[in-house]
Image (cartoon, rainbow, N blue to C red; front, side):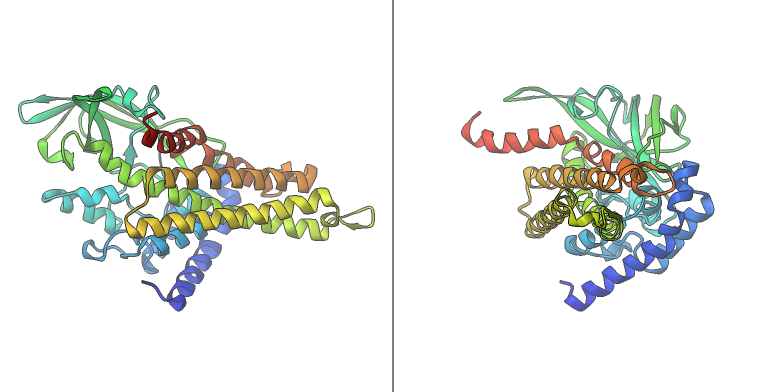
Length: 384
């Protein structure tokens, strides 16, 4: 477990990294709508130099070996900048730890070394929150699999080298009725029948790309199954749970930065002969923001403690995701109001933070889905 000194050193290192390597490029990236290659590679190289690249993966595979507590602190600092920039300081998905045999040399270890980039491909045009509605499917053909379907809103900083693709490979009978059996596949870019292209452009986190993936009779060997056949959802669930905690942590970081700007403006902007923060309508917004940010940080900390103990539930992660993302949205909106008309001017970053914050309530599971997960956890023990 990290000591207080180690924790302070880690946070200060990441903070300096973000402020020196990412903050200076935020406006340019937002204006261009992409991260220039030389900037992205510079961030990537600095991340490797500092030992932050793949810091989330175990030391035995070449990663940084950091635990959940340390990762929450890192994600909080990364959250203060654009996702388009901080995504270059890569944390490969933990799903790759399911790689076995030759898969480790082909996918896991190159991702740890920064030689390959992956995409997590689950969402589909007609199956966003409704994972069981996915149309992508893979059927057996001898020892091989034939993959068909499409994915969208698959995000990443640059064109990937391979994708972790989830597809239905059959159906199982359960007490609640038939349920699709989902399997994860490792699919290399350039495989015949696999097309990967840039998708829709989002007003949040401009420069962070979305990709559209399509599969037309893509032949995959048995060695391209990640984990066990039919256990794809269990595999994705391990990533999604902690992913929602990291979203909560990044929201706290961004909220801290925005609230700091709002506070400074409220203390220096004068109307009617006094700082606008002295007026209750403004001051109470700051007070509410400070309280809600404190509560959000504590909620993240509690979930991380539960994860360390191996007792974190889907509902725990859902509570973090929905509360922190909505807390951030409220602080961002209040900050626009505190700045008044200037809050919406392109010359200031407030409008960018406002736009970026809005996406947090949607990706990695919408607020509505998170509330459904929480409700289910409350009612199911009672048989409802």
